Length: 411
Image (cartoon, rainbow, N blue to C red; front, side, top):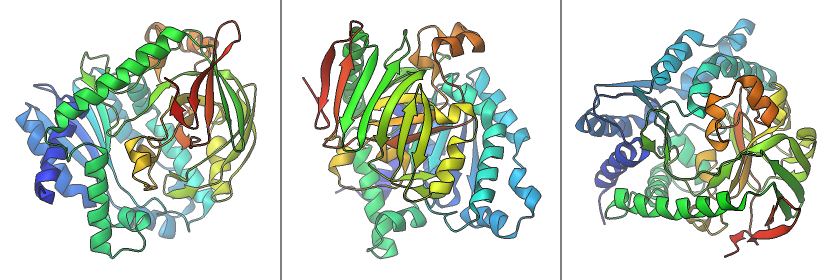
């Protein structure tokens, strides 16, 4: 069996070659927790090997993040580095700088902090970060989100193991779910992308006007924008580079109409949001908006999240994932959206992706809104899929066609 160092190097190479498809002369800007420095260094090695002109890494630290909430004055929770995010947005705007986010923070880092302070800090950051979100959701440049195993995250996933064994187990799961443990991960991703693109082609040919969900606690109809476009796997950014925005990725996704969502839906996995756990989500939609919403854990954080702005209580994405996906089959709840959303079908409140609507990139903000595209300071996915979920596609004439039964594709 390959050593950890060998697998970590293969993972880093996969990130550069398949995740970002970094081009000669591009710069790379990545963010990462301090504990992910070994992965950052290996990614940097492969980035320069691929011809990067400059690699810049920005690190986050859990201890200093906690200091803000434990020692900061009231004004500290309404501040955000707009100067930094403005520079990041400028770097991505012309596609000359690729974006890599390495995540792996403690999913419950802020669980014991004042919910109002957490909400204010999240809102302030979201407002300041908006220029970056606009470039990412508009696919201005090639970007990718990946995970690193860190001690705090590993502890949350494997609480019954010793720290060393928990960390090793999480790395092993990451390598397996990302296909980094295969003889040729880049080739494995090419095969996987082909399968996802086949599914995307089939769904785009159907031109469904809506999706209907039925399962325990769920009876939901999600209308789709008229010119919706399904996507999944590798996609082309506006700079002409084909990249995989998420590694791993098992989803196909498209754009819901912001005013055509009705019914009830329950979450099937916990959600880690900005250092807080949210679980047991149950909401009711009317005309696209959440009118009733509760959560058995993290209810205050959930309520404040969907109150961020008008679009935060509306859908910006709907994604289908088979219950038998490799991540679901692992039996692991990762307590991290990047992985858990690829174990189950999911929805996302907040900002929509322009790639999911034909010609969205040439429309004015007013035209996008009129067409049904949602806009918001946030984009937060939560999982609604399970082995008990049925999904139908609703055709233009109102006919229901089975898409998924008990969480699996109907072939």
